[in-house]
Image (cartoon, rainbow, N blue to C red; front, top):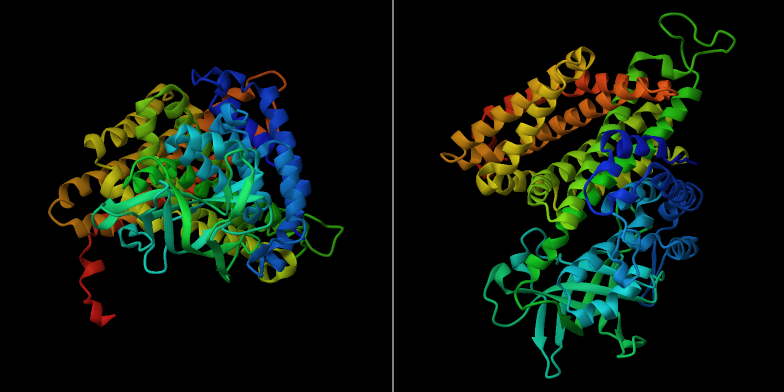
Length: 592
């Protein structure tokens, strides 16, 4: 059985020492004093560790069952969901006008990390609801918001997003689900959607499906797509539940992981739907919640890495095998714990340096979303839009790699179900695929985000790095271990961007063939910047009276590892980008 320990100390460090949230001018951040965030994180951590994590293995082994059209979630899920709902966690960062607590998205992100680490499949039920709430909050009518949001934020009702169909995934212009207008102003929705997370379950009284469908008069492709509310049970004027709508679960997907979450085939047979916003604007409405949704998936990637690393570390401290090359570390025992061996230490440092750097990046990203929403900061909006494909793609690729390294740390034990590491590997794998595959994230980054507004956001990112280096170049301890490597990596990123501008216009394949490497190059520079910021904060913290010296020194040492052993990967990524697209594209399709 695996264990999970909420990393609240590290979260507090990122929130208050690195981001200095209480000093921010973002509305609502003045409430984020250390004592307040500590209390919230402690309570969320207890729920994660004591309630959700013990159900992680249960959900994996039992899975969900479809019985007479009803999906039964694993043993204990309903009681845990009720506890989550009663604690108000569903609406932590939702609008108080509809029953939410109005906390910043940043705090919701910190809490979300713990829930995902503890039980990713379980957390998806409320996670999908959160996305549906955001879409309705942004684009629903006042009547729709009053009808649906209070109960969705409370958790009595849950929500889904229905995009994918058997014949199309990324290319939503190919969807076939139809929306035919009815005389009463509603629409009749007919079609099939697949891979619908939380599409049917027994945790809530009603499920509010947000469905993309094509209504008449919209034209071909994505121009004809509209967004509809399709409740599982129709809602009466007084808010009570009416008759069952013509939407059913036609089957459950047999998946590699996240068995505790119901991934459904949803059949719409003339179901009653209610138009959200204007006709033929559905795709634009869905993309309203993409930044937050994709940051959430990036969070899933590294959060699975967090819990996998914790269990790998515990194993490495206890497993006795061999002797340290410098002499016995456990002379009274038959062998030394494997953490003394350099290669095991390498794997652990790789995991530790990634998950701590990833946490800082995700929290910074969440603060940019808050700045954009809460104070209308256009620069923050442009920056997070640029960074989202990096956060989603890089953090899930590296998060999965981290779970595999954690599994490898256990050797043969890691390959068995008994020790639980293989579940983290399987659960994490989906994060590289859904909410837009990581290849799509790379294309979005290079093809859309990089050149937007004349490249204003990426140029500001480069300036941000330059400013940080210049402001701290007098700190010799920071310069050698952090600033110099960051400067070199940033130059690699700039060289790659220049190559795309020069070669991409002549041969688009050159740019697109290097897009994935560019996403990873950018990701490493982002984590390099995070580690430089964390190292500075830790060095300043060491000068304070009563400093937690062990924690802060470990932070600096871990950062040095990342800068010396991981950040130089930017040079390999740049070399592949400069190689162009010829070797990628020259083999004819029929020769594969």
